[in-house]
Length: 239
Image 1: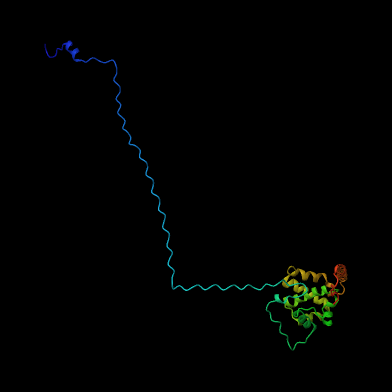
Image 2 (image 1 turned 90 degrees about the vertical axis):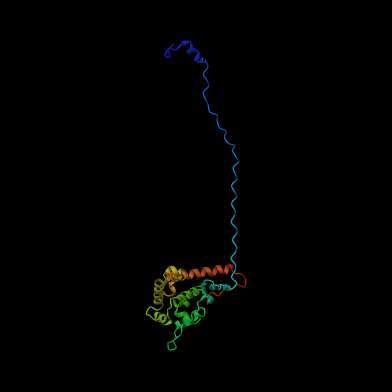
C-alpha cells in the first residue's frame, strides 16, 4: 500500500464521534467588586482664633471733650400789640443827633423802644392814634409803626417829612404802603399789612367806608365783652 492510498476504515477510527448537543458558549467569570468602604468624614474646619486686642498705649493723651454747642435762646413770637423785649436782638438803640430838632416822630420812636403805646396827646393826634375807636386798634396801629421804624429802618426825620407833606397823614400812608410792598411784600406781613389796608380811615378822613366798618366792629366787640365778662373784669376800651 502506498502512502497516498488511505484505508477508509482507518479514517473512521481516527475521527471522533460528533456529539448531538452544542457546547455552552464561553462566559468569562465576573470579577468581584471590592466592598465599598465607608467614606471618611471630612475634617471639621477649625474656627479662626479670636483676635487679641491691641495693647493700649500708656503714653496716649486723653481726648478732650467736645465743647457743648450753645443753643440760641428762642423766645416767644412777637405778640400783637406789645413788643417782647426778650426776642429783640442785641441791637443798640439808634444814636440821636443832639443838633436835630426833636419832633413827635422822635417821641413815637421813643415810645416804641419803651414798648408802650404813645400817651402824648400831640403824638397821638399826629399819627392817628386818637382816631382809633378802641385800645385794641391802637395796639395794631402801634405794630404798623414799629414795623416801619424798626424793621424798615425809617428814620424819625423821614417820618416827620412824610407827615408835613401837603397831604399830611394821607401821604404818610402812601409812603408806608410803598415800604411794605417794596422791602418785604404783602405776603411777609399779612397781619399788620392787611389791617393797615383795611383801616385807611386813620390816615384818610375821607375814607368813610373803612371808618364805618371799624366803628361797627368796635361796638360789636365791646357789646360781646360786656355780655360775657365776669365780675371784676375791666378793660380799658377808650384810652
